Length: 104
Image (cartoon, rainbow, N blue to C red; front, top):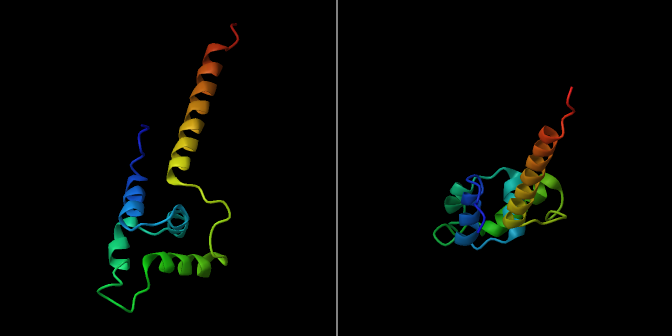
């Protein structure tokens, strides 16, 4: 299994713990929310005036961006794969440019 970047680990844990979809995680990330604070936001059983966390994220996203959800939803796993692919391409370009430098 690929290594999960440290900055995405809290998001994966929050997705599992609060049963959020990939779209909700992407919306929360775009809004700049802190996944460590989701516990206080998802407290609608003890504090009945609060809306469920999924609805809260959707409301905030709609208010900020004007539409209900992102056009292209990408899971955290897809982000990790894309980042790995980009890193590998960059390493290949670097290695290729060092090996094929013209000799004087």
